[in-house]
Length: 164
Image (cartoon, rainbow, N blue to C red; front, side):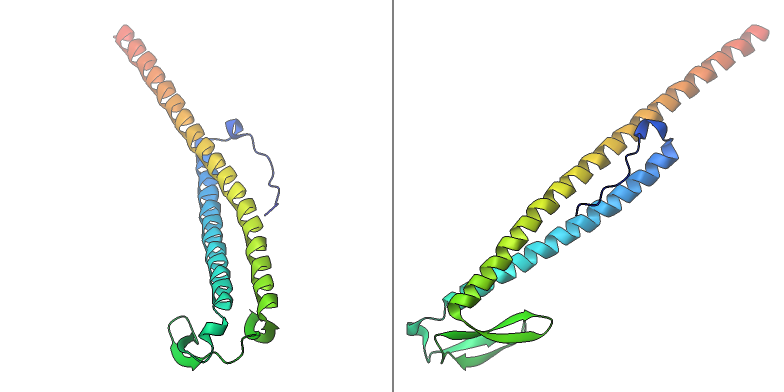
């Protein structure tokens, strides 16, 4: 997520431009948060796969169990091979691996996602801080405009009464 954006001096922007920056930051934070959730879900799935491979034990041989075909469809089956499992390696491809190789593969995926999640979390926090700074700048400029408008009205009213 290392895209380096152009630095913008928020003080040089008017309220309308700040509102556009705020909208853009909100969209980006929402997208990053969604991506974070998807990565967390993938990480949980791989951890679940590690647990499934760990359940391939001699005491479970030939016991009837439910085998997931999809996330909501299970069929009865029996564990017949204690040394090898079929694993999904992505994009619809499945390969046979030893239980130790399958566990190692899933652990590597979990570690990879953990590193990406840490980096993504830093990016989300940074963008949330940018968003908060932008919101504060909008409030500050709005107050300044209100005060300037009130001062101008006050001066205009004083001049009008002096002329009368």
